[in-house]
Image (tube, rainbow, N blue to C red; front, side, top):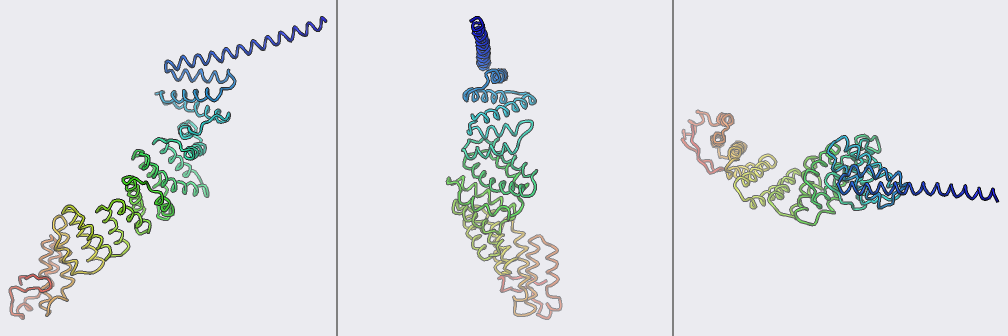
Length: 415
């Protein structure tokens, strides 16, 4: 009985001791939470973070709600810290806390894009981890801010730069397909223009040819924004991209031109189509579209530019010198000198077919020289004067003082 009584007493003392230890831990845990609340009232986020971390050890596990509050407090700490070195340390602490929360099964995927950004801003960024988090964020429909979108694409570019062989090619394909999808997201959701500019800079560093871009363009075209202005802006951005990559001869570029015209039939869109037809060497069709643009032009400067484009095709590509002459003579304003130079060359090119005699045909060069002089091209004028009739030829033709050139409907002085 004596031994039995001693045994009961020992067991009671052990139980009492552990009970006291449990109560001590519970009291210390509650004390940490009390300190957290006091610091948060004063918006002392850094000190609140310190007590949260101490409590995490003492309390031997937080529940989901406490971890959520701790994470938010850490985020506030990072946001309010001014010192760069301390901010970096707090970010590292936050990233580590997110990892513990994930292991315990409490991580909320709605924070994936936010967490990924902190991972990339930490002192030792795990780029693949950040990329996987961003991927989850896209899948979960997270709300992205400009910084998160920019960091995502920059991170993808960095992984591409460091990768080799098949993995490098995989990242390149992602950069292309993501550029199209993110551009659409930027247009649809009203991100800042500099976000697209930043993304385009990294894109251009990797993608250099048409063959890289065109396979993904059809997918972009099948899912354009429905709002007119956004749709127009998206198509215009990709038209400019294809121009930069020298893809203007592609069917996809033509499709974009037709799309922009269907969205908003402006003179700029029509001119772009005319330019495209010219590149494709469909010269007559190009001239017809230029004539449409000419009817749409609302100022003399633009009309002069359009006429000059028509003139260049007629003269350089179609060798339609008579048509080119007529166009040139209708151009005024800033393009007048250039037009007169082309008119001068047209007269010279047709000289041997204009006139019933050799003398008459040579007299065309008087007119060619006259036009060149008006164009301010003195050397060209001198060249054509050398081809005018000689004094002997003038004498042999009864020394006329003037000759009418029937092809051009003008009369020139014989000198």
